[in-house]
Every structure is written in C-alpha cells, then in structure tokens.
Length: 551
Image (cartoon, rainbow, N blue to C red; front, top):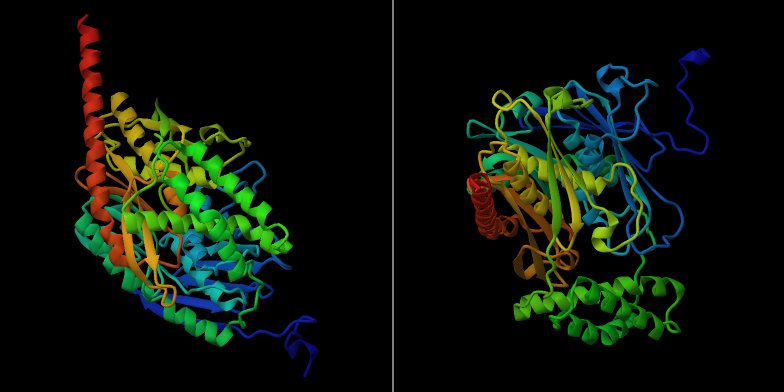
C-alpha cells in the first residue's frame, strides 16, 4: 500500500471525528443536518441544507470564569457573495461591514435562543452563521436559526433547547409552510415562528392587514410544524453531541437572597406605590436602594456575591411588581409620554435603496430609519454606525407601514421616513409607527389606511416546583420598567382591518401559545383607541389648513 492510499492522520492532540447526518421532511422539502465535516474545532458546528441552500452555524464559549452579571451572547450572521457565485461589487471586491439584513438575521437567531441559557450563566458565547451556498429559492435566515439550535445541542454549553423555527406564508387564503421566495412574493403573510416542544419563544410577522382570527390560525399551524425540527436535532445530539460541561454559575446563596429581600423589599414597594415618582426620580431612588444593600452586606459577601447583588435587588423588584399587579391589580404609576419626531422625504425612483442580498428584491423604495440618541433617556453615549437595536426597531416600523403604501404603478416615488426619538419611556418603535403614519398622511401620500401600534406585556406567577404558570395578567401599552420587569414585549401594529407587523420577544424559557393568542384581543382594542385619536388629530389639522387657505 502506498502512502497516498493511507487515510489522513488525525490532527495532533485532537480526536478523529466521524461525520453524522440526519434527514427529515417539512413542508414537502427534505432538510439535512450534518456535523463532523466542517469547523471541527468549534464547540458545536452544524451544516443545515435545503435543496441548493446550505448554512453553516458554529458556537463557541469563552474560557475561564465569568466576571460579569449578564450573558454576553453575540450572534454574527453573514451572507458572502460566493454563496451565489458572484464577486462583490465594491472597490476592494470584498464584503464590508455587516448589512442591515445580516444584522436582522442575527437578531432573528439571537431572540429565540437567548431565553434558554440557564440563570446565572454569564460566560461569553459567540454564534457565527454563514451561508455556504444559495439557490435563491429559500431564505437562509430560518435555516441558520435551526442550524444554531442544533449546534448548541451538540456543544458542551448548557442550554435548554432544542428549538424549532419555521416560516409560514399565505397564498389565496391557504397557508404555506416554508414557502420559497417566489411563493413569498405572492403571499400576504410572512410569519416566522420559534418554539420549544410546548412553548412559544419568538414571533416575527409582516402581513397585509391579516385579521387576528387568521393570525391565530397561522400561529396554531406553525407550532406543530416547528416542533418537527426537534427530534432530528435530539437524534443528532445523541449520536455526535458532547457531554454538557459544568460551567460555574453566578448565583448567590439563599441566605444572602433573604437578607437582600429583607433590606430592599419594603423600600422598593414604597417607591412603586408613590405616584409622585416619575421615570428618572424612580430610577434614582431604586439605584440608591441597590447601593444601600451593597453597603449593608459588603462585609458578609465574597467578591462574586457582591458583584451579583444588583441582579438580586432587580429580582426583588420583579417580585414586588408582580405581586402588585397580580394580587392587587395595580400597575406602576408615573407613565411619561414617548416623544418621536417623524419626517418624510420624497425622492425619484432612482433614489431607491439597492439591496445586495442573496434573496428578495434588488431594490427598496420605502425606508424608515429609526434613531435612538442617548439624550432621549438622559444618558451619555457615542453615535456609532449601524446599531442592531435601531435597525431592528426601524425595520419593524417599516414593515408595519409598507402594507398601506399605494402600489408602485400609482405612486412611483421613493419614500424615506426619519424617526428621531426625543424622549423614551416605553415602546418607541410603536410610537414610530403612529408618528410615521401621520407624517405620511401629512406629506400627502395616499395611504389606504392609518396604521397604529401598541406594545403588550405579560406578568406571570410561576409554580417554583413545576415551572408552570399558575396565574398571569396581560398589560396593554407597557412603559419601560414594565417591559424590563415583565415576561414579554409583544409589539403589534396594524390598521382597523388587520395586523401588518408583529414582533414578540420573550424573557423566560417560553410562554404557552394559548396565552400569546389571548394577548391579540387587548392589543386590537388598544390599537383602535390610538387610531381614533390619530384620526381626530389629522381632521383638526385639515380644518386648520383649510381655514388658513380661505384667509
């Protein structure tokens, strides 16, 4: 036997890995999960393929002990032009900074996986998802999210998955599971749904005024379809997965927690029951309680426990707020108004934005650019490039408004909205929807309907033994603190005829779908109320303008 006939020796210091593959079918398409061929040094790596599209997702964990009080999870999604056999059309012929679409796809992966990391797990985690090849028929974003779930299952990182992520369209009233890009262009619904076996984790919707009843039907269809992704991941992890590592969690003892509760509970309750406190006064008072607790327990706590005390005080805040809302039916007082300035600029068709993405249209004629300067919450910060949060909020508002724009044949102009947040104490993305709709009407653009948005929250009471929800309250038009201390941020925008955009983010490890669907009705009522006020305001302005012209 010659040397060329011998197999390649394993790399020194590493174990020779075998490749594993799982295949399954969802929505008439065969999906494959593979590991062991690429990125073998990564903690977890999976290639997910559907027909001519393949996505590689890898996960890695930072070394050493965590010295922070938050989870530094980074998700980088990249679409390189080689995936469709094209050289980048840039001066250097290289990919540049992440595009908006790449940032949005990264958020789509981050949102469902983040709630499933264990409490107190603050080690640095990096997810990198790359499109290897694309036939243009499948949007790689959902594939990347499922590949990331499978990679986390294979890794030694503690995580409460797997999850399934599915896209749903609707053509001529019929739902389509995992539609192609051509089918999506005919669809009046683009719904991305993520879940565990029995709980919802994330929802993202763009639609053309779909009714709440039809939306609920779509969600109930999407759940069992997304669950189909779970078993193949479990089987792959059983064959090729690593044993989960015992990472050190940043937790305090029950004794320290009780001392913090005894010190902080009464002062926190007094702040939340005093209606004279506004956003900043309340924040300063709560921060003073945190500092007082740290000073009182400084001698009793080690360095790690001392570092975790602000998180423990925050947990006590949550318990106080939940008790007031669920037991006493009292929400936090002192709601401040959001202030958003929306301006509209019209341009020619040549001003449309060029989109260098693997799927979707080549240009975009309607843009909403959202800006959240630090002064709107009285902080000091730097104005940098594209901010993931700003891009996400702007895109949500853009999805909500694009559904009511006139067809391009009737209105061929390029439209840009700038949404500048002047003051923030709640959902400024939904305020941007309302202000953007009014600005478009004021600019003389013939919208079919007004669009308004409202953010819905949820506060739950959970059985500590089973982890099941025993009681809950749905909150409409939540302020910033209720968003922080609550369990969900459910942003719903639409017209009187139906929903045009949704974004659901969840903090615990999932919420039952029945509760999520129950949130649609109060959101609908709140949206109609806001639309009433918007329409009155515009009518008053029109009367005023007519008076000026007559004079």
